[in-house]
Image 1 (tube, rainbow, N blue to C red):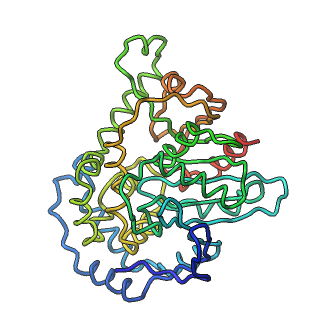
Image 2 (image 1 turned 90 degrees about the vertical axis):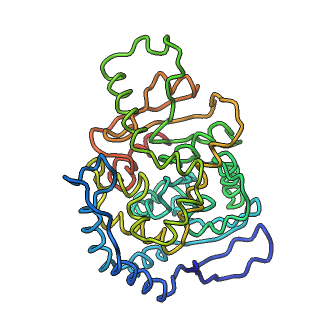
Image 3 (image 1 turned 120 degrees about the vertical axis):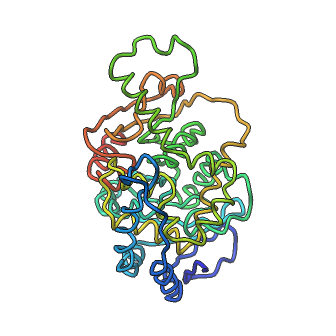
Length: 373
């Protein structure tokens, strides 16, 4: 399967930006349908508990839904916004760019999750462009930012590429929002703190106890509950170990099985395990996109690159805002402030999980406006 886009202009220089229309070959969609029809499911665990991983009963239901899923309708939504390609640091980067009609609008980069994509932000575009010029890039190895032509694409390197992208688009001042991998990008930009940086609004700051007993001084029931939730959050992320050590091994399986793509990792698994309000259609939309772009193996490599990057811990001085959702990773403020010296905004929400841009888009948009006001 080849990812295919039709370009409105051919790249004549590395700094050139091409406009693209996204349309995958019908043969790829037909192949997906055939594979779904021939799915061989794993034997069920008695009780089909999520404790063992993605239940067979859940997958059976999702595959039936997937067979009738209208991908062409998703493409129509994709092509309703301006899609572009450009080359930065030797790598093709796909991004959406929607300027605001508001002359006082600020530039805002939306950084997607792992293993999400730019698709998670499309429902928010209309509500945000009243106040923001939106730039929604895809990380190298994800979606249409493929193939990856080099190793070493850490979050730091990606953040540096994103800064180049914003300058290339003419923005000398901008902010960033992100969750999961996007939150890591946000913190990397806060560490970089480039000229004109307005701040990073993130849904998580991944600050963990260092082992110093003094860090627990002042902890109350809320902080200890957050620690317990943090342990659970880490326990369900077993894919981290595989991605961080042998991404091509699991990538071989995922490149050959759409249902494997659906079942594997935090994104698709946690959509169904009761900690998320995301709809089955949103799950299938993301799984289809990964399948059609054959990008799961290259997306998984960022765990490997991060695990093998040699870096000393750094304290961020850039401006940061945090929004914590009830069923997501519970950032502990004192630990976050240990690692980030300039947290200026903190919100907590009684509903929503790890993919809040899809689950609670109005809450995320309102918090973005508050932070960047």
